[in-house]
Length: 168
Image 1 (cartoon, rainbow, N blue to C red):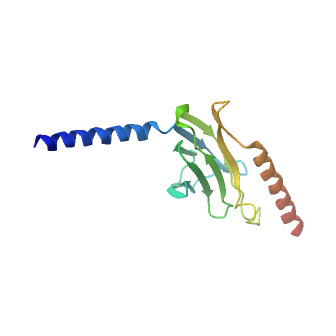
Image 2 (tube, one colour):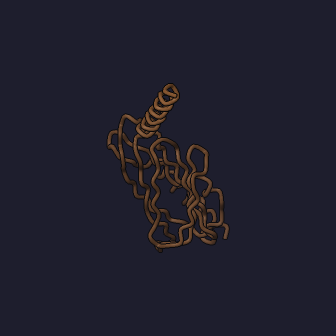
Image 3 (cartoon, rainbow, N blue to C red):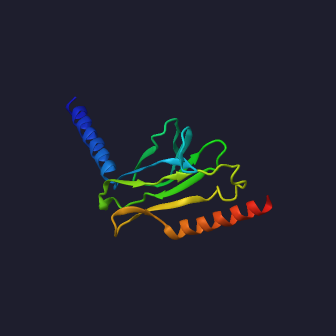
């Protein structure tokens, strides 16, 4: 009986230690928040899909005008997709693979999303690409986005929009 109790005690300690290690091996949490708009008007009833390391974490139907807020652990790569019927889908890639020794704990990043009506933009070529690539900048100790990538996406958007208008 004493051996069983000792074994259970050791097992409990090992589970507790593993749990503590698993929690401490994550650098922290980033809260991504913002508004979803179209033509400068805030939208409601859109869907957000969060995929982490190629696994769907959640799909949120938002039916209010308060915006969105996502708490993401800093231990994976996320794809965050914003969808609404009649609008082009937009995606964000967030690289949350942060060295756990940085111990960020909690940080925030604001990103407003502008959805474009399908009627305004009749092509799906552009909507397959992420609109932003977000990553942690160790020097600034904050999240930021790849400005050159976003600049190229805006150029591509303008080219496609020009072609679409020219064909009408």
